[in-house]
Length: 459
Image 1: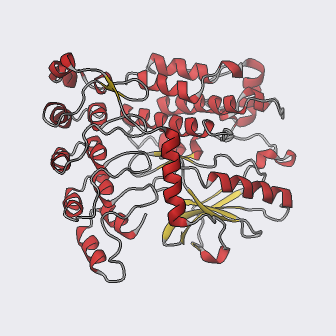
Image 2: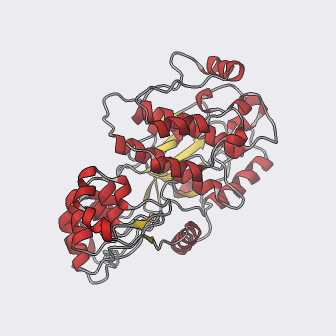
Image 3: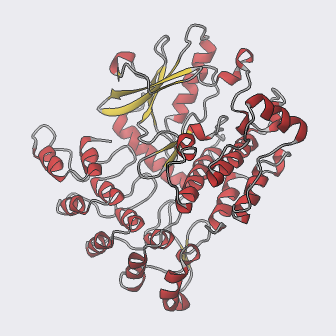
């Protein structure tokens, strides 16, 4: 995120004005994009700063229907936030009220989903929004909203013609984002260790890795480095380089962006964007943090979307280590997957025989617990882990109470044990969990089909 986007996020209008009036930074104006292709107008709508919206709209170079990496316009973000005044201003400036993002959702979809009644009514009754537009999952705005909003808009719904949202395909979105990113950053992702300023105190330390904050190329970054870099083989390095070259070209709102990497021992490190709120595991298991059903569902959907995107690549990209510790939370509630697609022993210690200690068994499928087998359906392994994550999200509890990894592994293998599902979990969600952690990998759903079930779940 650039300086102007940081200030827009903070609602610092004076800081923005000073920044653009500075001759050295005057070129960074309202249309400047951040890593997720957000303009200042996007950021102002996402974080609810109407004064920044007014400033951005006053600049002639702002494109009111500009798309970010997820295909969202400023109008979609303002509708999601419930900013009626901003929604009206954007519509007055000619914003396309029926634009659909990459999931086929329009501004009305989000206004209805988040129960912003005034925004939904304005869009449908005054701004010309289609009430019966279907997203990519065949859901119209009124299928996922309150009874109150359905009642208010029943007249519009009665005469509305059902249409399919005109959304770009995920492949088109990926290609557009890739070309923009590579045009800005160049194709060379390899960096030198001296180009990164690294904070001396680690953010976290595990058995295998150190994580620190740093600064690179005018971006705040997170650097993840292997603790032991003494026995790295040339084959390990080549595998890591090949995987990073592929992963660096991936773009999706639910994937943590890989910005670059140093691949020269003893300074190997992977740089990603900063994660303000840490991982989902910390959030879910902190009893002092309130979480609404809508936020819980958004978390589940975000993880599922990111995984569906990975598995839809050609060839498919596997996560291999999906768990709540590898799901990051941004300050707007977006979830982002990290540590995906790396099979090199440098960043996947479980890949080597010497490091096959049993840990994090909660998320490990039975076929993984049995030991190495090259014929394992690795997509199904990711789906199993997602089922366990769904249980965490729905219950905010430990999947297996009072059991260590060894005990969990033994019970899963010998007794086909699974977490107990409380009665308060919605039926569709409970069924999806059991489908995901089915013993037979071939019967587990794909992430695409899991998304459809999530969208049909009432919360």
